[in-house]
Amino acid sequence: MTTRVVIADDQPLVRSGLRVLMTDHPDLEVVGEAATGEEAVRLVEAVAADVVVMDIRMPGMDGIEATRRITAGPTAARVLVLTTFDEDDHVYGALRAGASGFVVKDMALDDILGAIRVVAAGDALIAPGVTRRLIADFAGRTTAAPQRPARALDGITEREREVLTLVGRGRSNSEIAEDLFISVATAKSHVSRLFTKLGARDRVQLVIAAYETGLVRPH
Image (cartoon, rainbow, N blue to C red; front, side, top):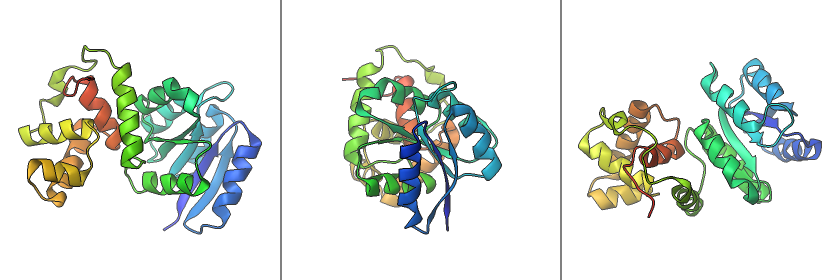
């Protein structure tokens, strides 16, 4: 199955570089390029994209607002934020806007392609080590007071609450299974139900929900 990709970046060299990179991979197809957030929002719906590789800093509408509009719109497109290490503040805004994760511009190209595939498959990107760095940074930027009412968790079971707590601490499904003495398949099922009950698109958004409801607190 081919993943349809839109590249949104105001630098033509970045767009052309990613396009050329994907030509050697038949499972990835670049179906459009955008130089602004406005163009990205229009293009995603027009070409039925699966994944948008989204730069944050673009003229006019930035990548955060474009991400918000795309993830709130009628398409099922997922957004993979393209950033640099010095833009962490923007990354958190993009994650809250509905992005499924981020890649760094100076990452190995194969890692960027791998991240596109992971997001297209419906997961949050990321190797556990990077996820934990993201969580640690997010925790450090989160105030002690919950930002989302605890009643937002009223619809989940006690076991699901335990699972969400562990997701919020950066645990993988296999680690959750080990901690709770359940099978990996059962852990995965609990995570899937949390996606549905909390309206989360992926694991990154579950992490955010765990912190914002106060279920997990910064150390």
